[in-house]
Image (cartoon, rainbow, N blue to C red; front, top):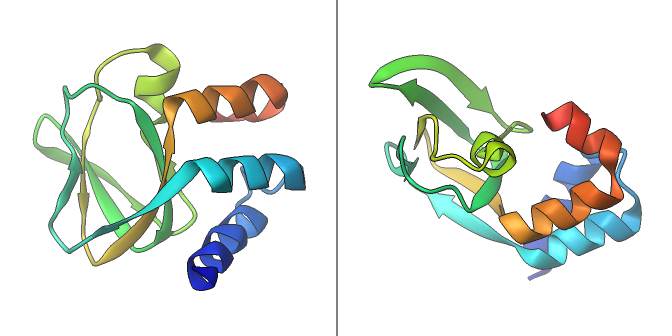
Amino acid sequence: DSREAILVTQFFASSLVFRSLTPESIDFLSSRGSLEYFDKDKTVFAQGEAGDSLFLILRGTVDVEVHGTHVKKLTQGSFFGEIALIANIPRTATIRATEPSVFFKISADSFWEVLVQHIDLGVFIE
């Protein structure tokens, strides 16, 4: 729906990391991702799980936990899940929504396709 498309486009336009992408790359990512909604206290993924996607925080906040210990909070405009994709390892942390949140989920294949086109983005994320 158009409201969701606006939300995703606003994220890419305002994100320090992603705003350097060309409109074509933004369209590419937007067309290959999906919105995911999580309630407060819902686990997005757990440490040790296989990582097959990257998440962009469109709305909300998440806690990052490593071995059950809170290490940081991520807010709107941040992203997570990239470590498992880049290093091809299991998830290094558990991510839990701390409030109702909306994420844009990008598959590993789409993520790598964009990184091939934008090496500078890959270097920044890494």
